[in-house]
Amino acid sequence: MSRKYLLSSELPDQRLLGLRRPEAEDLGAYLNARNDPELYPFLSITIPMSRAEEEEWLKRQTAALGNAPSDIVFSIDADSHLVGYIGLHRISWVHRSATIAVAIFSAEHRKKGIGTGTYQLIARFAFQHLNLESIRAGVIDGNEGSRKLHERCGFRHVGMFERGWWKNGVWKAEHLYELTREKWLELQAIPSQ
Image (cartoon, rainbow, N blue to C red; front, side, top):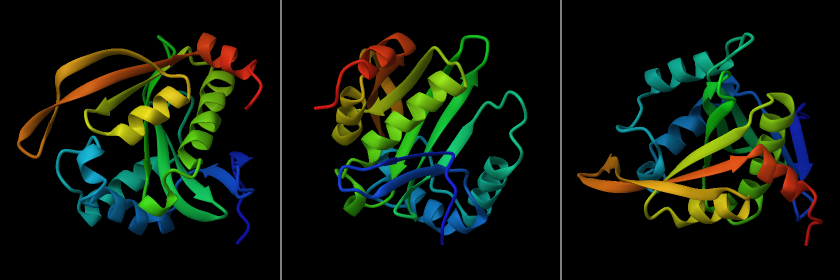
């Protein structure tokens, strides 16, 4: 099936990376990912989601956004196959900022450039289309893949909450990252290696 993407680019291995609005058919993959014991410890949800909760969440994401949404979520496709999701959350139209969250569903799709390519697309969308000034992120202590992704994409570590997340009966630090429009523009001027 040929899809239309709001944002797309080519991955280093020549596969097409595309961001699109979530669709009802994505429900199973989203539900599996949010309840995956490997991925769950790094997600912001505090308890696993039921099918009914996931359906309600997906319904909100697929509804018309209006002029000033607080959340914008995209499904991530690699060669027309759903591999994850990314969202801009808690969008502040006054302060021109948003918090970013991403999940690449299975280990077979991680460390293949999908996260980096997706961040490049969403940053372009946030800064050029939405006119945001900064994108923020929280990374749970121990999520080395996410930490490396943010740093590779130009996010700067700006602080930490020592007791940021309560997960599996223990407190986890939350590392805070930010990518500003200024830094993003600076990165656009640097030729790719």
